[in-house]
Amino acid sequence: MSRITELADFVGKLKCQVRLKLKVDEAPEIWARGIGLPVDGYIELHGPSPFREVEWLEINPAVIEHIGRLVEPKQHNYLEEIGAFLLSKNIAYLVKEGIVRISFSELVG
Image (cartoon, rainbow, N blue to C red; front, side):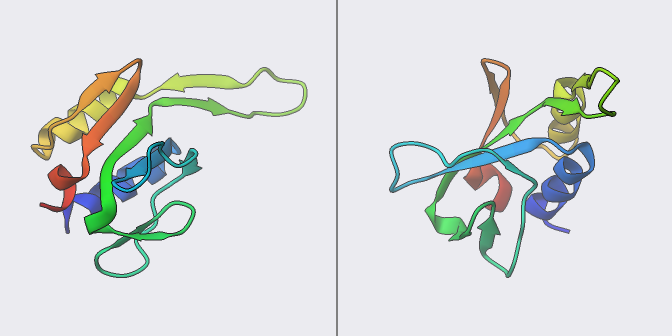
């Protein structure tokens, strides 16, 4: 299993939001739930993008779990779990303002 596939599965289980920045864009895409891999060599958050066009991927470790109308939502922070996962896969990352950023070449290179 490839690093990007393992990361997509892991992030999906945690229900973290992700976003990516394409090399040709000045700003990153908006946050999305989960990482899609529609075909080899492409990643999809809001629309398919070839791996070669992606500069970096960010993961928001803060997740708010809606319980019900009368119950306060639960707040989770999975920063430690994400860090441990990335270290176990030898994927370099940095944390900037509480957000995990991974150079895309670390995932597919």
